[in-house]
Amino acid sequence: MIEVRNLTKRYGKVTAVDDVTFTVHPGFVTGFLGPNGAGKSTTMRMILGLDKPDGGSVLVNGAAYRSARAPVAEIGALLEAKGFDKARSARNHLLTLATTTGISAKRVDEVLTLVGLSEVARSKAGGFSLGMGQRLGIAVALLGDPRMVMLDEPVNGLDPDGVLWIRNLLRQLADEGRTVFLSSHLMTEMELIADQLIIIGRGKILADTTMREFIAASSANRVRVATPGAAELRLRLESRSIDCELLDTGALIVSGVSAADIGQEAFAAGIVLHELTPLAASLEEAFMELTRDSVQFHTDGAAA
Amino acid sequence: MSTDVAPKVSSDQHSLKLSFARVLKSEILKLRTLRSTWIMLLAMLALFVAFGALAALSTTGQISDGRNGGPQNFGLDPVTTVLAGASFAVLIMSVFGVLSGAREYGSGMIRATLAFVPRRLYVLSAKTIALMIFVIPVALIAAFGAFVLGMAVLSAAGSETVALSDPDAQRVLFGTAMNITGLSIIGLALGMAMRSMPGAIATVIGGVLIAPALLTALLPESWRPVLKFLPSNAAAPFTEVQVRADMLALVPGIIVFVAWVILSLVIAGFLLVRRDA
Image (cartoon, rainbow over all chains, first blue to last red; front, side, top):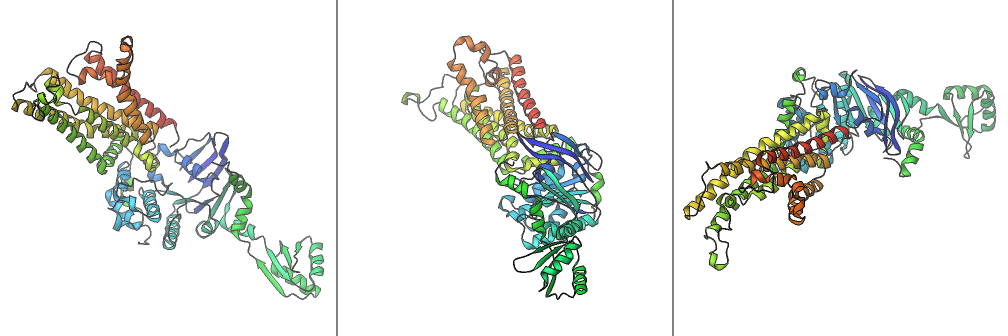
């Protein structure tokens, strides 16, 4: 479990992370979603103690990360895809890090197999593609067999096969009862991986919810109705305080009630319906709506 | 590429523990697994010995006859002659120190290192000791190698030689190895503090190696009491055969030199602990 409390980080006048509070629970895949520059990476670096907060605190399983007996057995992290020395082999890169905590060479080889790099384990990592670098970073994160895995933009640079692989891997880690925390700026990716969703924009938490609730809230039961009796149906619905919008095409967009309710209402009034379609709002749209201010902020060029 | 999923928790989980000894092992492994480590150590060894032999040959007139304008004995004593390559060794090893300090900042690996080892002073101390483990033996071998080979060349030509048992020779040989090691550590500290190889290399060469000599040459005599405390001047009493009156005595020289090394490490440590990684 990762508990982030009132975490704040300033770079000069820019507040990159602004009084952020959330908890990441074991057994779930928690997505940390936000536009570029929203403060995701900064928050993750503060969780590991790489960056010092200007305020607030982080508890990793109830204690500070740095005080753990074997920190990498608490959180295994992937922070950057190219964080290795080009002149060293993948295996030696992992061995140097593993040695600090007494992780065996056997585990190093195990992790190399797991991420699919065993065949290139002894060649220089400088020749790796972005995707292979990403796999090496994930190998680093898994080395300590950690109770929590924290990955910053893990699918970056992975091919479709790799994306599928990491989805299955994260699901399995969560099913084993581990805490899985990953960031992305892509809602479409989160939709497929995450159970829990924390949305950050401009350094502030905009939403902290389950994926299911977010989907439900975003779709908001909107239904498109095509009918010759649009005006009459609209009157009847609005008299029940139901929100209706008449489009130029003559179709009605009804919010807040189910398609079944609308059909029932039309039937009772003898109105003929040509179309009755529940609209699944795109989550990407919902996410962009939610983070519009922070994206605006970002394109002004002021974000860190 | 394989798309297997994770095996269940491995059995060695319980034995995992971060310790300084392990961090030191890791830093030794880091140096061992870079080819540049071996290249630089070999280059230092080769240049130190080769230039000593070359200087000896040239002194004895075996390369160029004095009458043809070649150097005749340089007016130098035998020990100084055979240690002609020492300045190369100092240069290469201070760059080696910078590399071991700044390299991880160039690649971004430092963040992985500090995530594995949140006790940052462990990292700095382990890097320092690992560097010493590599530099000290090679510096000693190079200095004594240059001495033995150079004296053999001089002796073969019937020139004046100095025995290994000579106290001045021993002082200068061990002192030279200490100078090389100390400057490599200052390089490491600068690399960690500046996080940039070009910047730290420029600083260690320009600021620590060249500037003191240049200032000593340019500034009036009245500055000497101050300038003798600069790192390369402080090293003079244990790297030069002639004991110079305007420099520190041996023991104060060692103390001041070591103090510079420690100061550089303290600054690097302070910055490492305070700054974001």
